[in-house]
Image (tube, rainbow, N blue to C red; front, side):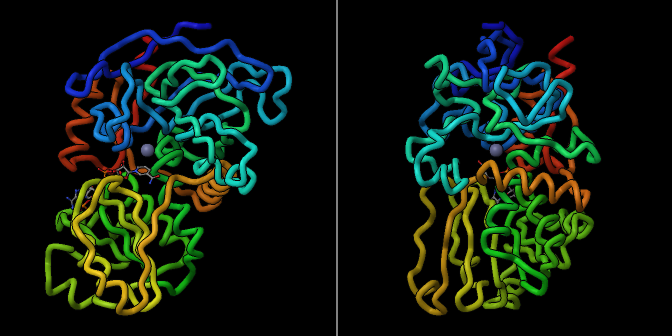
Length: 349
Ligand code: NAP
Ligand code: ZN
């Protein structure tokens, strides 16, 4: 075991604070990573504040990790010292069930092991995330990061990136499709970039009129203000696909009405009960509401390679580790453009 520095929460209402955590000694299939940067996902806040009711304290959040390999186990073949790598939301799964065989480890029938607040299969203890100086991860759950991209701005791709890329990829978004991305935050801004890169007519659907200029800079062809009933009515029945990233309980009926016949809205944000859906809104037009959870390791690598090819990264605001509590508050207040990334050098010194 190695003791490393970290930042974590000890209770839902408490600020994050410095603590020491143990990382396992590398086994034959493990990669040890010196963490350079870690993104701040809204899920980190949900987890630290126990919004989902499953928090085991202390929680060390962080599942948008970029770093350099510093050591590898004897049987590791894909990575060597010095490689630039990433770790996302999962660090292990059973690797034997049908979901794992289908490269969908996020739906592992035994339950995937979360990068934090999960159960470490090697030690039986709690997993701790990327708000720390180093991490040890099984090779199969480590991603190669393209060297041509701005490393800091790659970190958010490991969660916000794959979570928005996967549904667009799975539903085969193509040139000419009219795609709406609901909510311009960490996930939403990546959704805009990906939909645009896939050739779709991309519409930002936002509650914040002041984000319109940014939305267009990020690749949106147009902006639809969801609070404006006239604008919503003008787009009724016109979308081929909607990606809904709203992080809290809300009324999805106005969004469903935007879909064309036989089209789909994918929910990735609110993991909680929603306002009731009026059945007529999906029965009329054979519409679908689906969900999506991050993406498997293979697809995450495809996403990173796609980003390398199309020069896509996240728009970020850099912070030091000790600014994390202010960052959490600002994300909650919808005040970040569009992802905070922690410079882990600030925790090392
Ligand atoms: P975020 O940066 O806070 O962005 C969410 C955006 O949603 C906000 O910027 C805002 O955009 C909009 N919004 C906020 N409150 C709203 C409301 N009451 N009604 C309508 N729109 C609202 O969050 P994020 O990091 O992108 O994460 C979004 C959600 O996805 C979180 O709940 C997170 O836990 C979840 N998540 C899910 C997965 C998955 O695999 N499914 C993975 C990662 C994260 P506008 O100002 O443009 O309206
Ligand atoms: Zn996340």
